[in-house]
Image (cartoon, rainbow, N blue to C red):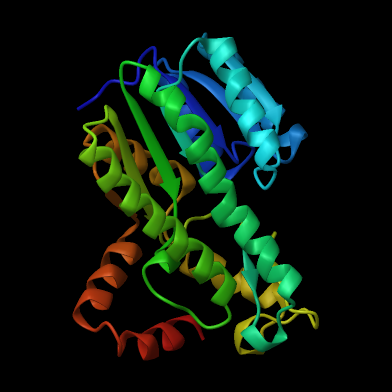
Length: 274
């Protein structure tokens, strides 16, 4: 069980949700933090909330879809802190629309945020982590990185890609005897603003013809895990060097269903989300 005291942790998407609660819990354990978010105001708010913890904190605006910005940020963080031990590639967004109603531009946007943002963060920080005494990359996939769901072709593609990349990275790191570990995180329904902020099809309808407001209401009912509890589960998994972390009872149950019924699980998903 690793202690995070005096570690240096980078968290993308730290302005709200799981990113913010990860920051809060790591600060409580004595970790220094490099926090970033595309929304500068929100990440500065996170920093202010942690002002009395006594740990070193920097907060920056960062668009994870910009390769140059992510690599420059990684260099700045290493110069500022001297090292990095933990990288939480947590920033993400949702796009809900039937495949035929979705523009290719929206599909590209979804992949840029959810997959390329994680890939850039992993690539930029990996050599920095390897220069430290120890390092850990924590990439946020999703329950929808394990199963498919209607109206989520782009989201599924991005989250399956994060899972595949992270699992291959685990093998690469083990092959060369690296001191860096990697974890793929798969949250189920976590009470965050992801659906509220989600993009949708051009006629503003979600799966099964739901309006955005109806989709938010449905998500609020089925999201059973708080962001605080999600952060606890993730950090426990990192301490134990788990390769895959399932966040929430719903994620655990659905993962088992997918393993038992790899093809027929889809009718259960459709019924659950209807």
